[in-house]
Image (tube, rainbow, N blue to C red; front, side):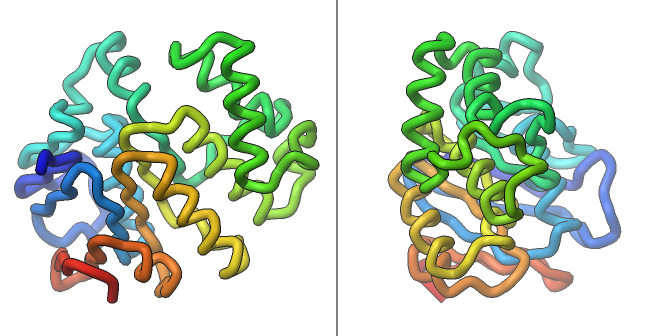
Length: 222
């Protein structure tokens, strides 16, 4: 089985004391992995995977690339394979929820405007957000806003889906439905959660725990 994410003794170039020791971990391609950890660990981890942060030590490989070393065109090509939901959510306040999904698809060269609109509407439908499509992010409830971020991440059916605490504002029943949708919408899914989530653990191929004692990866649900 090929590897989607490989960290070998990685420490970010800039890091919080919560990142207490070099991180070594692996996510097999085609798996659904849940990592229970803290925001001060998950935030730099996700940004290292996307290429927004550089490693100060160690080696990062994501889909066969060192994300931080890519030039502009390489980074754009690489990110077409990703669906990402970081914290904060990055929704643009003066655009509708629909356009918050359409614009990244067009800008990153994943689709033209017509195709992107179709993809956006399909994702909004899957997430149960049709009635909110024309609202701006600031005018919707927190759970709708969070679901909109998930719709944006899955719209183009990415090869790798990276989600940082994506269900914190969503009811447990809806979170289970959305997690199952994420699983079918991407080849590989990595979700960081900042609290216990039985719905996620039951779906996971692997559950990892990352705290001051280090990173511990277990096969199967926990």
